[in-house]
Image: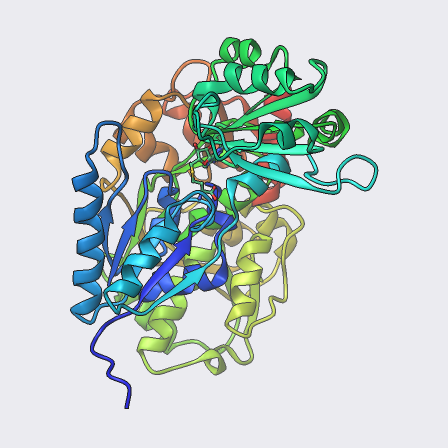
Length: 497
Ligand code: SAH
């Protein structure tokens, strides 16, 4: 029988940067790993896929000795032999210029089982994110991937420069420091100086920079543009196609750093929408949701459920109400016979997740709109809300004949956990900040002071804008529809102005 005393080492490709480009298999292994040895060029969000693992930074820095590399290799072997599940997380694809081959040889020599999980190489993703098709029926039916750091005059160079000069498309990795030498050598081998060339640095990262030129001029052009490592060089007619095919640079929020001070649980969807439009969301929770100081009122309300209306004004209210309902052993049947209102499409969606279809969703996502939509009537209206919520909704409903009651279902509190990281992000420069509630605006100011000059301040609705203004914040844009889409659209419009 096979002896299984050693854990497996998984050589996993992390992709070129954009955390969305890791494979599902890679993500799955990260979630199960005991220890992750990662390189310098791995996006921090990829590491978040391994919340339970020990994370070891083995990124080589200039000046690190070969001894250092040996020590890393030994660690890898030791951890596996101790029976652990080890992920060796490498930038791009693990076996494209990543020394993955050498690491595998070592694992074999030490009888450590391993697997490879391919990744999206920067050699593939860099051109793609620059709108350069590596192959094209009219221009290129073969491609060369080469290491550009090898000295082009090295006596026994393994590089076939004559072939590079003929290849329709050549991608050089590790070559930025030698750009001019590479391009001169290509010309010396007969490649026309007018051959299109592009440098893509930090491909797929928010700071991706693309410089397009010719092999004669690309070295100067990329120096002028301030190109930094890591970068790839692409040579060939296909580069010209990016004039019409570039897509990422056309995104409306391209390169914008947008501060999102939401609770951890809520930031995800907003950040996803921002990322889709090319922005770099900077998520730092400013508030967190905690239980109310007392559940008495909510418990009483839950015990008395059965008739009248129940109105939910936020997803927080839905979740908090349901938490309490379930912990009392009850379920959705407690609401049988009641009418249910939801302010906002997201609130309605949160209810649907609990099997409830709202009877009433007012046309605009404000409390005022709820009052208007309910009109005049009588009977009880239960409103589970934040403990600090104002009474105006109750007053307005009562004026219309209802007997309304707000019961505290949760509290919002300032979340200090990210104050330093948030400060750092602001100091590095932010282009916009998005407020989704008065409480996020208030906590933002308390944690980090007023938003910096020149940064676009965008609020999800008139109430949030009012709250922000009362804190002395200058508001640049207010969403016309109170939803994530509405907020993001308002930001796009404000950035265009
Ligand atoms: N295994 C990696 C390559 C490692 S060699 C992969 O498949 O992508 C390191 C070189 O990769 C760098 O010198 C640079 O040329 C290139 N590289 C890695 N990530 C990059 C990125 N995000 N943008 C541009 N080039 C990158």
